[in-house]
Amino acid sequence: MAQIKKWLIICIVMICFLSCSIHKSKSHVSKTDSIVVLFKKGWIEHSVPVSCSSISERVSDRKADTIMKIRNNDFYRIKKAIKKAVTIKQSGYCDAKMSVQVDTMKICICDFNRVYNDKDEQVSFDLSVIYLIKCKSGYYNYFEKEDLFYFEEIKRFGIPADYKYAFSGIKRPVRIKPSSKIVFIRSGDN
Image (tube, rainbow, N blue to C red; front, side, top):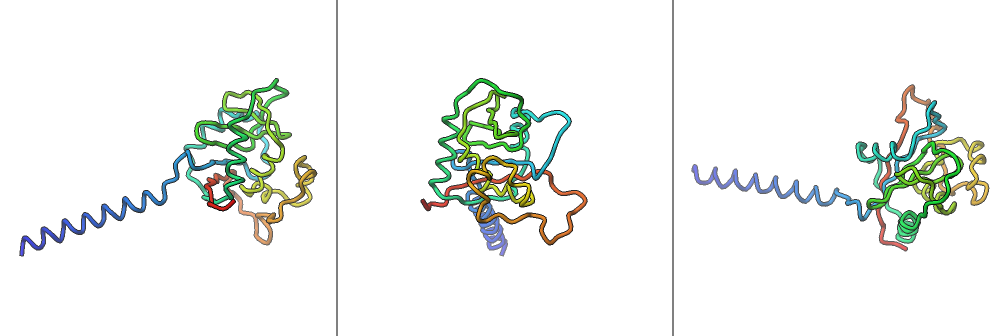
């Protein structure tokens, strides 16, 4: 009887161990196969501008709010743009509104669509890729429709087809999470 109890306990421990290992491998998303986006919701202003280096440090401290599959073409377009970003002459300061990380590369999208790296150097970046990142992350959903026309990229490319104001039909809570962390993974579709 003691021998059966011993084998039963060993079997239960092994099942628990295997189920934890399987669950961990399925839920784990490595940095090389993901794009991490952290953005401030809506019109958030600070008395002192938030630098790209300081917002980039905070990204790893936060748990992801959403893991989202995006088309392979979109995934690689964003990844390629970040890796090919070239330092240019700085034109103003950065008040970082969004941080985007791919592998070890980090950029921030600031006011007026200026883009900086994590060394606080301004880099060249395609406006259509900024629009793509903001669309896919749901960034525009935290602005009322009338306010969207202040964005240069909206004037050029239009309001996203899936735009839905995040606070429509609900009472705005006293305290909402001021930022959101989204992780993009490849969907396998083109």
